[in-house]
Picture 1 (cartoon, one colour):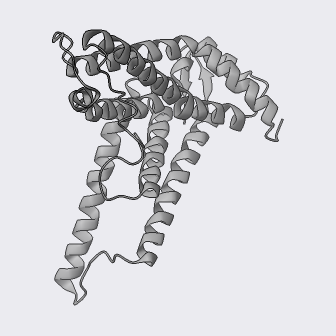
Picture 2 (picture 1 turned 180 degrees about the horizontal axis):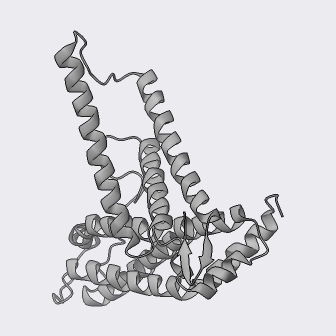
Amino acid sequence: MKKFDLNRFGKVTGRLILVRRRSLSNTFLGFAITFFIIVMLDSQPFNWTALSHDDMAWRIAGAQGLIKAICLVAFFVIATMVIKDLSTRQARISEMMLPATNLEKFLARILLVTLVFPAAILAALLAADCAQQLLNMLIHHGGRASLIGMMPGFFLTGTGPSPLWAKLEGMLLFNAFAILGGMLFRKSAWLKTLAAMTLIGILAVAGITLAAYLIQANTDYVVYLPDSPRYILLSNIICGAIILLAYWGAYRLYTRMQVINNRWINI
């Protein structure tokens, strides 16, 4: 089993979804209730008066930013839970004994936390949106507004000058670091990963700033960031290399998983 087999990968992914089905159900229900409450609080549920569709759209527009922030934070936290179901010794043994390659098992976990869980959250948003429309139609005599319909490109467009490809690149970067942190840390993985990312960011900015200061203070060179296609291409290459390195590091940690004396040693 040294070669990647798509059929075997599908079976491993299906098994993993079954193992995490309770977490998926709790995620769907929890986010559906949360989104429903947020939207209803903005739609004045205790004001039983007739409202037009435009009035309803204006009232629930304030919920967009909070829901988007919750979703983005949730996507990061969920990505750090890539091995959350392997907390017991028996679960780790069962994972290692699966008739599949390490790459297939690892990619199944990446797929679960990157696509399946976010899909459950988006389904919860859709369910909450449908429920609030039905309830608001009863409260406001037919007045309703779709939260999803007001948010074209809900996660990718948004506001700001960054193009779509840059936002996708940023999402991949955060996902890669979150998964790497989830492989490195077992307890409170999201908090430790966030702290590590913050520390790395501070050190990187401080190092670049210090280097730029020393160059300008001791030489005749002027340091600046050129807004040219060559610079953009170079930055994309560097970012892509960091993303691949983070995923590769997470995979290497996964392949070094061992069960020794009831403890899990990654490295």
